[in-house]
Amino acid sequence: MPMLKIFVGTMYGGALDVAEQVKPLFEEAGYEVAIFDQPTLDDLVGSPTDLALFCVSTTGSGDLPGNIVPFARELEEQSPGLPELRYGLIALGDSSYGETFCGAGRQLDELLEGQGARRLGERLEVDAMETFMADDEALPWVEEWIDAQQLKVA
Image (cartoon, rainbow, N blue to C red; front, side, top):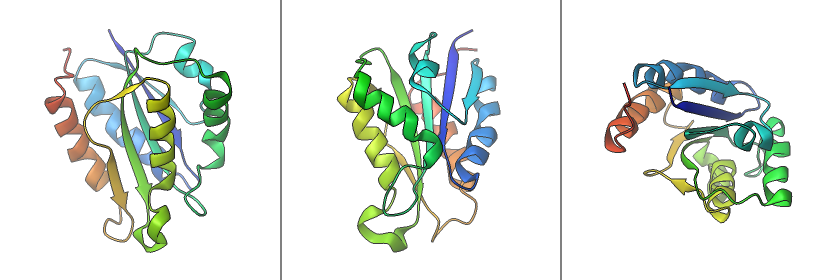
């Protein structure tokens, strides 16, 4: 059974809630799913990762939440090269912050692409000004993502 790893960057639990809500959709599609809410680079590269999903909220002025900062720092410093990694990204933000809207997700996306990872499809950017519960947007997006990227294995 292929392994999907969900990496979470969150301040108040919103991104973790999204990860927990979408997990069953991937299980139904035939994946073993692991959620990492204190992710490290070793969680990504230390064992096989067939597919990754990043659920990241934005804090401050477009910053990464504290729990995923060590992961991002290790990714930058160790520069492991990730040409085999296929991933999706769900960014949570608040458009009232203007230029820094979904800044953490965009920053992580750039880091991953810089390592040669390949994002499948478009990044989902959820705006707290328009969507009270992020999973209201994330669940249909994941269903569509699984279909559009032909990710079903079961």
